[in-house]
Amino acid sequence: MILLDKKDYYRVLNPLKEVKINHLFARTVVENIITGSVYVDNIINPKVYYVYHPYGNSLLFGDTNQNDFNSWFLDYALNISKLRTGFECVQAYPESWQQALSVLFGKKLIKIEDNTNKDISKIEVFSRVNFKFKKSVYLDFKKKNFLNDFNICRTDKKMFEEMKGKVLPKYFWENADRFYVQGIGFSLKYNDKIVSTAFSAFIFENQLEIGIETVEDNRGKGFALATCCAIIDYCLANNYEPIWSCRLDNTGSYNLAQKLGFEPTMYIPAYKLLSNSYV
Image (cartoon, rainbow, N blue to C red; front, side, top):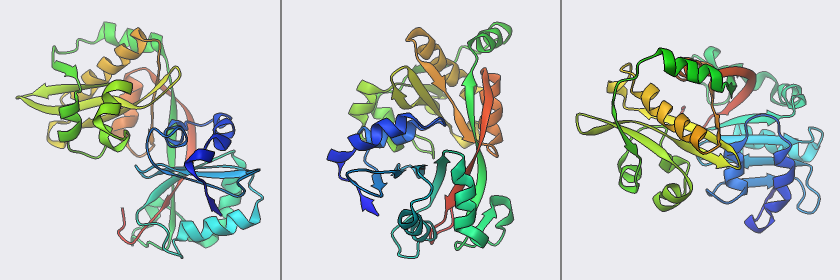
């Protein structure tokens, strides 16, 4: 298995664009917006690819029948050679990978809800959801619902550095300067503190994928809804298609998306590769 040099990432870009599930996180790595890792089976004529994003998301795609690669990937997934230091959540394309991984992982594969003992020797499977934005549904929602006049401003570089939480711009952008120039975010202040931020996790061509974080003590107050409206309005004003995806069991994100006009279109198996500290 070969760790690809950044100068050769161009070999991955066209095959990546053929992937039909949401893969913008992988493009940020392949297009050198953030530093991750890209593995292939062959430098000159690759047929299978594995792209790792430092937030913990990975994409496996290409030919399912490359036995040497598959053997390497099983070792990597089970962390037999201790190549991983943290967890990863893997999505795979095309759909034929689901059967291939089921065979490859065998009895090590377990539903995430069944891993009650937090056994790190297992590989957990769960569902991710891809959505499609319905502009008419969103505009109808805004027309029928009064949104409070919250104090929302553009997320600046100082906020980028200071915000705390699990889903933040600093986990998706190399630095504050790059985020401020190439990305966008909107933050909501309440009692003089930033309590919610909706931001561009990824932007490519006419697509902008939304990330959202709300301080835990301030959830359930409509803050996430308001900040997401701000970034969706930005998308509509600048001809971006808003993109949303989340875990199926993330009911907050799943329900918020549908309020905002996002319709579930694909339910995709994802595989959580565990590490010494269960996450």
